[in-house]
Image (tube, rainbow, N blue to C red; front, side, top):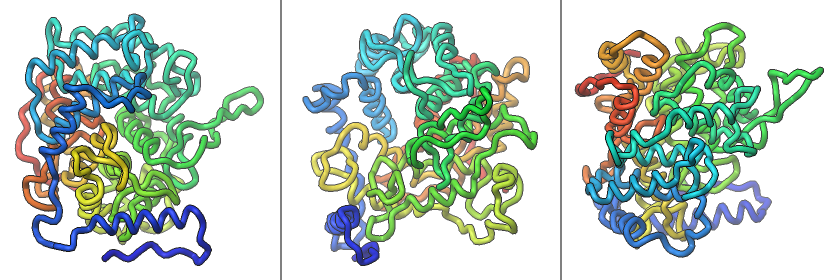
Length: 475
């Protein structure tokens, strides 16, 4: 049995809840340690997803009326991760439903007739990446990209950030959703991303993770470059900020005064978010909080994003990692003790398979909670992140860049950098039988590689070279 997390001898409501949670998790460890100890019940999850999609979501989802695109995306992406094909009729019904959410002034709302918002716009476009196609009624060509871009620019703030909707708040989740869609739909321009990287860095907290935003700090009537972060470090905000940072990297200056992320501090915070033995290796989203299955993706996938910054298993402080840490890097070589796993991929899979699955199908935060669409999607995506090592491949980048038709422009860079990610040969690690294997997902978009390549090839009007068996990256 796992060893419980020690306490300091002064029980509180927080420590009592932590202990109670660990006892519950311990009860989900099978006494039989045989080969069937960890099984992904794909058929149960399929039935759960089909019930929601075909019969409709249960009554408790009424509160999610403004999140209809998310319910669609979580369901469709769960099918994709589970390697389940969707029939043409269901795809068309989904397309027709999604297009009803498009706002006449650009973007997508949370439901028909609702105001456009950056988050449901991401969910809608990603859903169309899964079920859509070119041509009349296919969804892709019905996206009003001109109005979408104009709406994006109307949300841009003077500090490089974006509000999530007209008269809304600034939030790094919205910035990530905007940048992801802009890359998928060929909307990245210098004016769109101007100043955004600097804002992202202002959201990094003293712990190393990222908060939702930062406080505007005015000095002598001028917005100061240094501004305090708003709130504590959080797994969801950290993923969105880090993914945004990676998406912006190809367009950033290498000057000394360019914005920097404190990567060593970020890495330290991320590895401390994985639970100890008594927590079965699940991830938590904040310091001193309980583990939660959804952070299997939000935090678990962040390690793949770090690879794009040069922080990889066995890497030293040379190259891009050293450049990124800049003045905040500790003296000496702080990376000598980095081994071949920045997080425990085996333990994370066990948490999802032993504690995340519900007997009735679907996945959850943790027992004894019920399953829901959100946790089903992100537990499965987290399982994918733990099974597959997907990272930028120089070889794949060269292949995509060589196939580019047209001038070598910002568009070419956005296209090749987004599609250079590949699963490393020998990098997969599946706990349990081979039947537990799920599809690999793109760390930047949470879509399969096939769906990412399909929609980007269409909007960039390019052909994507066929993938060859992945080769190990040059270090």
